[in-house]
Every structure is written in structure tokens, then in C-alpha cells.
Image 1 (cartoon, rainbow, N blue to C red):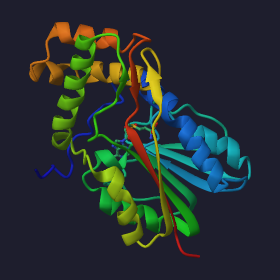
Image 2: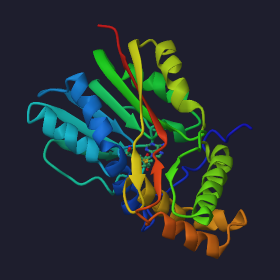
Image 3: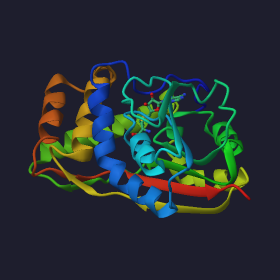
Amino acid sequence: MTADLYAEYAFNNDVVEAKNQLQYLSDTVDPHTFATLDSIGVAPGWECWDVGAGAGTVSHWLAERVGVEGRVLATDIKPQHIPAREGLNIARHDVRTDPFPTETFDLIHARLLLMHLPTREQVVSQLVQALKPGGVLVISDWETNYLDLILDSPDETGSRVFMRFLEICRAGSPLVGIDLRWAARAHSVMRSAGLSDVTTTTHASSWAGGTGACVLHRSNTFQLESRLLEDDFTEEELRTLRGVLLDPRFVISSYLMFTTLGRRAQ
Ligand SMILES: C[S@@+](CC[C@H](N)C(=O)[O-])C[C@H]1O[C@@H](n2cnc3c(N)ncnc32)[C@H](O)[C@@H]1O
């Protein structure tokens, strides 16, 4: 199936639930991202760009780390959930169509963005051009094709409804521009775009109902409610799903996150 190159982003930062969604997403993956950025050696004075920054938690971590000698740009097509702070320049920017900043960066970070953008390969090439010589590009995305995520469950019905929810999301993904295989393809695309020392790590962890990935899925059921109902999900199933995702006896793995780093030649 060919996705519309400018398919509407699957979610929308303007809706009431978006603030929760972006916060739960950060709670679920920030520890992994911060450990990765720490291992790269982000240091005072660095100039960084967080693309599609969402709630801005990574932008804030970077601003803290680069200090007053550094500079962080946080951009998003809808940047209203990025809190202001000293040393952080926040801008509305569509990475598919708007002109890129004229300055170049020591580090560019894009998490859970490119999986949504059908023009992702072109965007990667442009991001590579926006790196300083020796600069690092960090791309993290989820592999959402593998759905065997339930680790423990108090009841069959909750498990069945959760699986149906995941399957509907997977089936609908190409229609909103999501490439289910992108996370694993990022490595070769970044190498082909001219980066060297390209490496990928994968990460997932368990989350009990009421925490991390469970409350993120639950939040997504609100943004996706009309599409789920169109897909014959019943109101009763929605209630069951939202209930099980708050039950601490229900435990899932987060989707597997692929984090790929590559460096521009000196
Ligand atoms: C799934 S969220 C991830 C947010 C953040 N990077 C994180 O990992 O916490 C995707 C973000 O990308 C933004 N976005 C979607 N399409 C975009 C585009 N074309 N240009 C810039 N940002 C975009 C959305 O508004 C949203 O804030």
C-alpha cells in the first residue's frame, strides 16, 4: 500500500488528551534516551536540535547538559507542549516542508517522529546536512509490527481486547503514514545518507497497568476512539480495555525501540 506522502500525523497535539499522551510517552522512554545521550557525551557548549520535540523533556535534558555556553533548538509542527526555559529556543517547524535552520548542530535528536513521516528518507538526508562535521544524529522509533507484548494478565477477556486494539492500530498504521518496518530500516538509511560509525541498540521494558506504556496505550484509546469504533470495537470493549490498562496485575512489554546513532565525517 502506498501512503500519502503528506498523510496527516496520526495524533494531534491540539486535543485535550495530547498533554497526557506526550507525558506518558516521555515517562516510558526518557530513561533509555537519557542513557543514550549520556553515552554519546553531550557536553557543555554543544549545539543541539530536538526535532518533533513533543513535551520537550529531551530538549530540557539537553539544555541542562549543554549549559549557558550551549544552545538547544526544540521544534515541532505543534510545539505548544514544550515548556520554555533558559537556553531553549522553541519554534514551530514542519520538518517535511519548512526551510531548515541555517546553522548546523553537534547533535540532532528525533524520537518517535520519522516512523510517522512517509518522506522520512528525504528528511534523514536533510538532517545529515544540518550536522556539523563530526556531529551525531540520533533516531529512535518503535517497531510496532511485533505484537506479542502481554507478559502477565489477570483475565482472558482483557488480553483478547488488548490484542484486538493492537491489531487494529497495526492495520491502520499505513493509512496514516506509519511504516511498520522503519525502525529497523533506519540503520541502512542513515549509512546510505553518508553517516559513519552507525550503531543500533534496541530497548523495551515491562510496564504494569497504571504505569508507563499501559497508560500511554490507554491515552491513545481516547485520541483513536472514533477510529476504533469505526473498526467495530464496541463501547463495552473500550471500557474493558481502559480498565485492564489500569489493573496492576496486567503487565505488558513496551514496543521495541530501535535507537540508531550515526556520525557525520569530520
Ligand atoms: C509521537 S510524538 C513524539 C514526541 C517526542 N519526540 C517524544 O519522543 O517524546 C511525535 C511528535 O512529532 C510532531 N510532529 C509530527 N509531524 C511533524 C512534522 N512534520 N514536523 C515536525 N514535528 C512533527 C508531533 O506534533 C509530536 O509532537
